[in-house]
Image 1: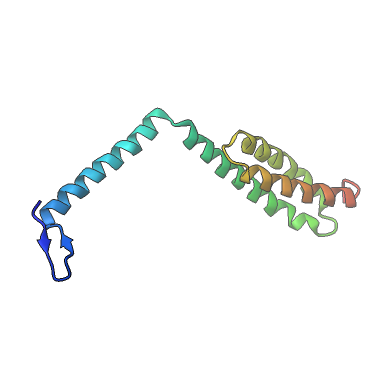
Image 2: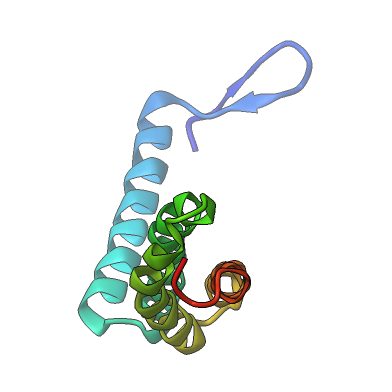
Length: 120
């Protein structure tokens, strides 16, 4: 293989052998990436749905947090549709993290709305 033996019995590959091994791994990795992209792997899409659900939850949380200030409770009405969309997208996802995060944000918004009578 063209390896070089060093002091403590460790064999190291020569530069040309390393280059061939690395090139083979890069081609294999490129083929895997192309396969995922071309086939539109459902698992890949399901993970992306989880990330999208988390993003909806973060945007909703940015709206819900200031809405806890008195007289700004009406802003929760703008966050509720985003939260529901986040929950629905999270339900289609492969994991539950995004959906659960949106449910927590929904609970915060619902409690705040109920404390303010739905408007204040």
